Amino acid sequence: MSTVATISAVAGKKGLEKVVDDIYKTGKDQLRIRFKRWKARKNIGVLYTQIKNIRKVKTILQPEKAVDLLKFYYPCKVKIDDKPKTIRDISELDRDGNIVIKGTVGQGKSIFFRYLASREMVKGKKIPLFVELRRIGKGEKLVDHMVEEANALGLKGLDKGTFLWLAEKGKVVLLLDAFDEIPESKRTRITNEIESLAKKYEHLQILVSSRPNSGIENSPFFQVFEMAQLEGQEYVEAISVMAEEDIAGNIIKSIRSSRTPIRELLTTPLMVALLIVRHGIEQSIPENLIGFYKGLFTLLISRHDKMKGGYTRPRKSGLGDSSLENLFEGICFLTRKEGKGVFSRRDLTSYAKESARLSSIKCDSDKVVDDIIKITCMILQEGEECRLIHKSLQEYHSANFIRNQPDEIARRFYVHAAKPNRVTHEHWREELLFLKIIDKYRFLKFFLIPATKRMLGLDVKSAQRTLKVTREMIVQVFGGLCGIGPISHFMAPPDTQIESNIVLIRLVRDVVFNGLSNIAHLLKEIGDREHNVTVAIQDFSDSELGHALRDWAVKSIKEIHSEIVSAENYVKEVESRKEIFEF
Image 1 (cartoon, rainbow, N blue to C red):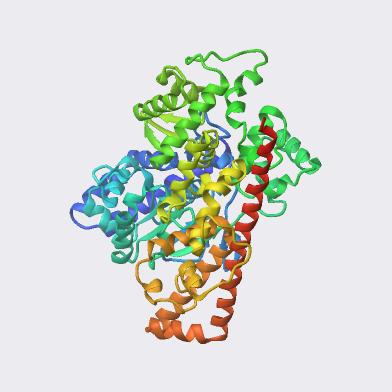
Image 2 (image 1 turned 30 degrees about the vertical axis):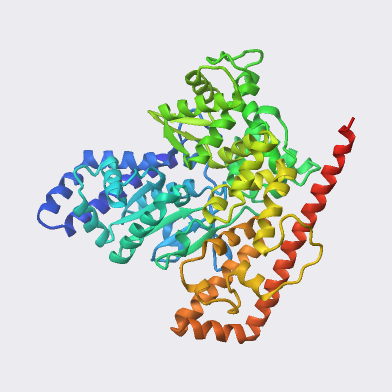
């Protein structure tokens, strides 16, 4: 064990001894008896080991065995007052209240929370409870799940009442990971349960991680912080931490000598990790975003063979690379359709069987699953539980499955995704962003053009090269953003059509959505401050800022229309090529 690890172990155990001793002194009667049992040196050791195991993870860099994240962890930065700040401890967020940490694909939210949990253990003030929200069972209460997690950590015999007493005294800190991975059907209930804890126990600190626009960041009980992307030369430091010294040097040298602006894509730890994996297998640098994902399955399935010169790892399924990849893409689509990233081995075999049926591939589905797990490591198995190694890889291969479908089948998907339904847009958002690149023609023709035309109230079938922005159009797209529409569009539960339009705008122009989000928060603050929402918004509408906002709305709608015109031109150009194949 290294000196750093030894010091960390000693500090971790002392930290736990300190917090458990503090709980023992604070408790009364039966609580003291229970805490006395936890105070035993043996039990402290068990508790320390279990919490330390939070740091053990399998990643795309080390898919075959769990490793301590401290061996590859690059310190995360969080935007505080719009300035990136390296966070090595919860206290460095400079907020005592409840916090949502918002981050996009691959920014390392889960790794960050695991790291913070391990740091909290060393401090010896609170017991860190790291909870993966996706694991909450159907109908299971959040508190009941957390009690189970606490028992699994080593707090044997802890019941609901004791847990809530610890929450009341502020002796635990909750790190609730991946809110966005909760199925839509459970989100409202779990949000209510999280808010209930936040409201009732003022000394309990709750941190939640999530992708943007999952819903939890709108809770009045949380302050939202955004994870910062890697900037400038930070990718050099990240590569140096994640890869061995000589390998890191070769990769950095390749990036600097590359003719493509690849460094501009190295904005997240995931992108850095994917680059390290690809370079380690084929000694190459991808040219663009899709290049990070394209062919990765084939590279991983042949990784061991390439590294062992001439050796071909036997496959139980007897299938070639292409067939296995087709089956894997089908599995990704089917699991994404059901909103699952974690499933039992039995369910995974069922997905493989259905994927084989869809792809017309004759195989033993159980053996296919074995090959994917043991050779590619893109699906990890721990006991009977299986999970995709990263959600973005699931989303890309799901998109690839759609891209490889015949026109009529793909059209059905795009028509479904274009329906005015916020949940649908959010569910398939990442696939749609990939498809915008890898299936551009059908994405534009079947999804973007009809969806955005309906959003603007235009005739889907006819082309309109000019656009007159009307008052009704602004209300329809932005829900009365400037106070010129029904006040209910602001303060009542969002209208499904309006809400789905907002999500759709994000697919067209992220800058429009971000602007809209900021303005919505501004209006809410004005309403809260004035205690009269109608008057506040009317004053806002009549102000100089309100007029500027209307101008901004008109400009944004014209930009969206410009996107439609460009898309129609592209579709027309592609379809004109069909003449070549008319014999």
